[in-house]
Structures are given as C-alpha cells and as structure tokens.
Length: 258
Image 1 (cartoon, rainbow, N blue to C red):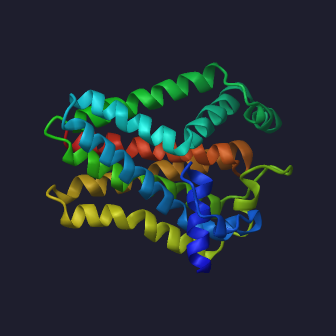
Image 2: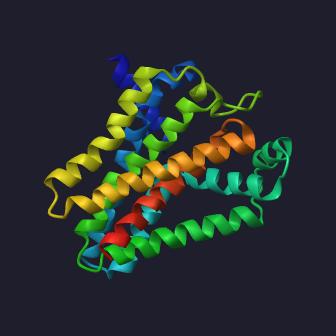
C-alpha cells in the first residue's frame, strides 16, 4: 500500500491525472516517489499513443500526430516543456551562475525559451510524422518506449548531481535523498518498456538500441553541461534534459527507419 501511494504521488506530481484522496500527498515523501517517475512517463506515452492510433483511423496522419501531442501536453500541463523554456532562457541569457539561476526563476518566457520551445515541438512533430509513413504502429510504439526512458534519464541526473537552489521550490523535496532504490527501480521502469517493444515488436532490434544509445549520450551531455554551468541541477534543468532525451530518441529512430 505504501508503494502504491508513492506511485500515485508520482503520477499526481507529473501529470494532471486525478489521484485518490487516500493517497495522502506528502512533500517529504516525494523523494521516495521518484522511483515511479518513469511510470508516469509510461502512462503519458501510452495515452499519446492511443490518441494517435485512434485519430489515424479517421484523420490524416499529420493531424493524428498533432492530436497526440496536444493530448500529452494537456495530460502533463506542459510541465517538462516549461522547464525546457526556462532553462534555455537561463543558459542563453546568463553568463554567471547566479544570473542563470535568476533568469530561470523568472516565470516569463524570453526569446531563447520561445525558440527552444518552438524548435522542440516542431522536431517532435516532424519526427513522429516521418516515422508514420509506413503506418501508425512504429510511432505509437516509440511514444510508449521513449516517454518513460526520457524520464529515467532525468532521474539519473538527479542521482548524480546536487540540487543547487537553496530556497524552497517544487523540485526541492524531490531532489533530497534520492537513494539506490529510487534510481534502480526508476531506471528499470524506464528501460523495461523499450526492452519489451524491442523484444516482441515486429521491427528490427538495432533501431531500438540506437534509441537507448542516443538517450544515454544525451543524458550524459546534459549532466556534463549542468555540472559545468551550475555545478548541479534545478527542476528546469530536469525538464530540459527530459525533452532533449525524448527528442534524441525520436531522431535516432528516424535515422534508422524514416
């Protein structure tokens, strides 16, 4: 029951999905709930895949992709996309560490954030559209596999870097005390959907390995960049890392198939 409560807590933190009242929201338990963050990504990816599959039955595939993207944005409230925009504004507009953190804290979107958000959404649309040339199965499987994998990559960054903000924030309770159990279960939950898709799916194994390699490489580059610029990470950095890892997965599939 305790683990079920933590799973609901993770889903409630990362999505707009209503969770049971008996879950008993507790900010000091969020660090333990971190192990289920990729599970929230799996739910988002599965819903996006279902919307794309059903929409493709009655609409052209590009419109089905747009509806799938809209569904995922509504389901998460643009949580990670907001982090991408804020982090890009900070890194693009600030040279000193303090300036980067100050700009990230500003809720207003700047030119760097707007450009990053537009490019990220366009890249996602074009990649999923290209993957659907031969039918909706491949991009739908990609959504199911890559969403949790990209969340697992962000969880790994949480485990290997310190949280750098001193003041209270939404991400601070999550960042404190990430242990071996959280990272182990989280990585397993993030990689397992990809392994299942690669093992039982009708497609070649090598493109899915390319997705895994691209995600690992992107996460490592993000971790190195955050360490150099901030000596750690913020919640916005995690959103940026998740979005970049997700995009890297789609692009890796396009290199192999599209």
